[in-house]
Amino acid sequence: MPIKYKIDVLASLKSQGYNTNVLRKERLLAEGVIQALRERKPISWANISKICELLHCQPGDILEYVDEQSDNLPKNIQE
Image 1 (cartoon, rainbow, N blue to C red):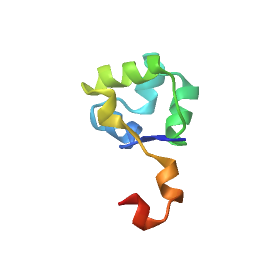
Image 2 (tube, rainbow, N blue to C red; image 1 turned 90 degrees about the horizontal axis):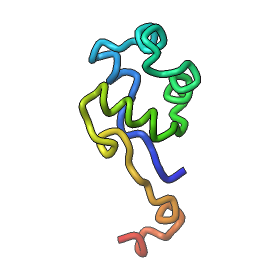
Image 3 (cartoon, rainbow, N blue to C red; image 1 turned 180 degrees about the horizontal axis):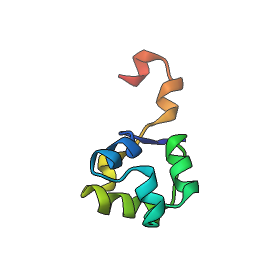
Image 4 (cartoon, rainbow, N blue to C red; image 1 turned 180 degrees about the vertical axis):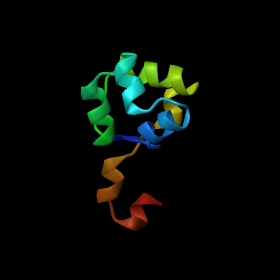
């Protein structure tokens, strides 16, 4: 998938006081979302929005686009 996480989202949330127990107990993120973040799988825009709210950041601070096609090109063409 060409969209990747730039940071460990759960570690960043934990550093702001939102460990997984708090996230679940206060219903900030569902267990399925927490598991997807552990596995670095995609989540919904609504959940990305909630994470940005909690971390006071922009989506670009946690996500990046990686061009997978450039990985398959010879190095002299990539440059």
